[in-house]
Length: 514
Image 1 (cartoon, rainbow, N blue to C red):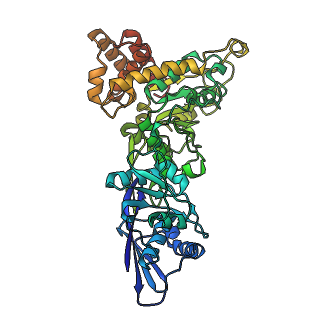
Image 2: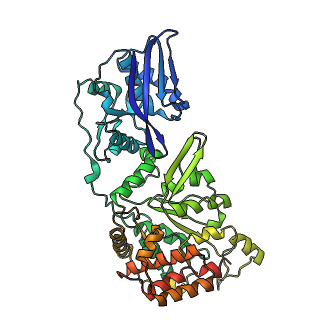
Image 3: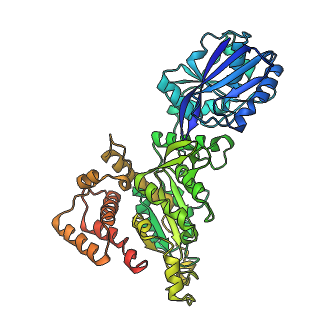
């Protein structure tokens, strides 16, 4: 007898429909044959399923049984299919009757006792079920809680194979987990890394960070060791605006596909923006994403959040160069033998570096020991095209003793965050009905519509472009930053002070790198 169960396969952060076809009663030696491009973890499911069936009070197939995961061109990975395979065997061997099973997408790992264990990608599975018009999804409890965030599809938690059988047979009534979209996404800022009130001095750097957070602009900090670059970067989460519900679901979808929501390791709190800080030894694949079956890398895990790269020149040149297209497009396409996936990666890049290998170039209290050739090689590790995609370049000079000794507290993160949130709300209202959510993501048409400057300001910008030898890309980025500065000032138009401040954030293009 042939039985078919609906499940799914993860392709990046999306799910594609997979039919688990089980045909029992075939002639030949009694064994399970699994086909359909399964990986090693899927191939091992037959041993888990047989034990789960036995310990749940059911019988294993006594005949040759073929299990096909269709379509055959999609690579299947992980213990995603244990539960649908077990249910398919029970239907094919006529041990149960489940007339409404086609109304559900089903996934889950089984323990040897028959208990279910969570799987990654529950959010993608729920979105697929909604797209296909399914009644709901059957998932292990932890995964079902994730799936409940998707509106319009019921998420049923099943703790064991036996419970799933009784529910599908009509012997047990299960209540779906209530849709969680009504919960507050305002988790509050993450204050575990400190407060901006603890930062002494560095007024220009604090201002640049505020502008960067308000418009989601990329930023690079250049300064000697001990000037506070890393200390400031660690406090960026305390001033980031709250993500919208759609942004929160996107964040959770990526981390769910990467399996980080199951263990909690590295997964962001719902309602907070992710902050990723990879070490400079990271590989190209670790940063961009990939693997045998393409999956999210650090730039995708930082989607709608911050990617902090400390000691930027210490990263491999190849790893840095792969950032160029994602910074421009907000998504990355990864092609592997197992398939091609496109992953979102709209993030705010925050980088830090020393001005030279020893770190003390221009420091009045320390002598730089680097030769001009060493300094040139060090700076050349960051290519011009990559630097061109960074909106704000800001120096972080060494603090004086008087600044270190001051007892007067600086402005708190709460005050800065209030201004950043207000500026971001102005942008959301401005771009309502479009895919743009922040000034840094404006298209050329939106720049022309929302970054209008008069002729005198145009002449000023032209003069700055010529003196600094800036590119056409830098022209657009200056206008975007000026628009953000105007938003922070609650101004409908870009005024001269806004444009001048935006221009000064590009002055390091010439002074430091060329």
